[in-house]
Each structure stands twice: as C-alpha cells, then as structure tokens.
Length: 114
Length: 113
Image (cartoon, rainbow over all chains, first blue to last red; front, side, top):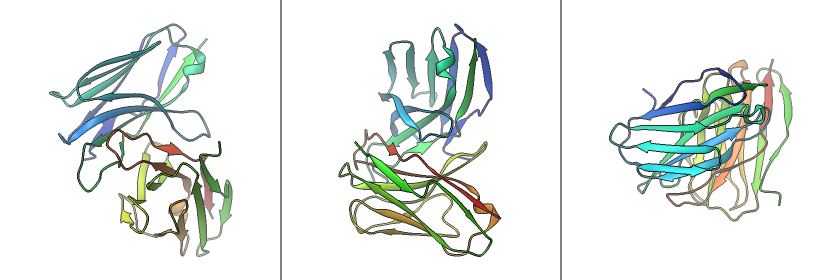
C-alpha cells in the first residue's frame, strides 16, 4: 500500500462547477500537507500548503486537512478552463531521517470545459 | 531566475545504451531529488540526496545510479537502458526543513526503443 492514495480520475466538469479533490494517507507522522498543480508537459508547482489540521483558503481554492481521518481535500470554486491540469497531493513529516522529503499521491487529472 | 535546470529535454536511446541526465539548481538548496512520472503512476522517487555528500534510494532505484557532484548538481545515470525506463524524469530541489516547497525542473522525456 502506498503511503499516499489519490484517485487518478480523470475528472471532467463544466466551467463554474465546484471541484473536490481528495487524498488519504497512512503515515501519522505527516504534518505538512501540500497541493501541487501540473500543467501538461510542465513540472509540478506548489499551489497550496497547510500545516496540521484545519482549513486554508486562497482565492477560489480551499485546502482542508482532517488528521483524525488521515484525509485531505482541495476544493476549487467557480472552476475555470485554466484550472485544467493534474493536481497532486504531497505530504511531509516534521523530522527524522526523511526530513524535507515529499510523499506524493498519483495525481488527479482535471478538465474544466467551457 | 533559472531555478532547476535539466538537460536534455528530450532523448531517444536504444536498449542497452547508457546516458546521464543532468540537473542543476541555483537556489542553494540542500536536498535534491530525481522522480519519474508515468501515466497513472504519479511521481515516483528514484533517488534523493538530503544534503551534499549523501544519496539514498527511493521507491524505484533499480537500473539507476546517481551522483551528487556538489551542492548545485545532481545527476542520474542509466547504465543499460531498458524500454521499461521510458518515462518523463523530473529533478527537484528543496530546503531540508519540514515545511519545504519542492521546485521542479521542466522534465526530460526519455524514450528507450
């Protein structure tokens, strides 16, 4: 079992829809939770970052972390065609020999059609 | 602002050939990583270097070797390429801190025929 599980989709929604992307994880040492966005033929780029449990909002994007359930989510409101990309969740621990190493989900491919 | 630079961008190899993928970062990061990305498999860690002078295996190290040449450069070598190594390879770098952001290169598209 991978340490981070993410449904690869693909997910296709109309413009303006609310999109929900999710990941689950098994390692209780994970404290830092991130979402990366990857456009076609590009490298991933950090979209949002959350520490421990709770919510974080940035414009149309909201990241949620539920450590008790080992479950994280990314919500996109009023989705736009420019949001079409692959979204990867990533996590890291607060210390130990793997300090700084990121553990990625498989990524969910999202298409927003006009 | 170069960030993470990978060379080459594209490469076609014949089975059994060898090659080295080069990666350099100009952000003075301690940690560097090599990933491969295949359809439906996400990013899989091949090797990483937590700091200059150290390297460790990731999830899929077989068939690869790495060299952390200095703080800036981290190379990935395929000694005898196989079709199963056809993939997109990404180099990344980050600080060696918990809340780190990883910065990725633009990728190398490798085809082994």
